[in-house]
Length: 68
Image (cartoon, rainbow, N blue to C red; front, side, top):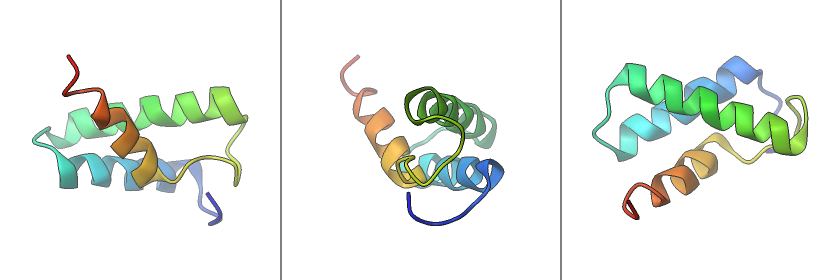
């Protein structure tokens, strides 16, 4: 991700994407977004420009939902 945003802003944008593209409630979206942020941190390190965009991370996660 190339924009300079805080982790909190990234999580909020990720949660918004879940809400935009799915039927889940806001609490679940926030939880999923936090998990995405944790995964990005594990892969790329503390919040950095190397993280995927919030919408890409949420979209990728949701691709697994249909597979179950």
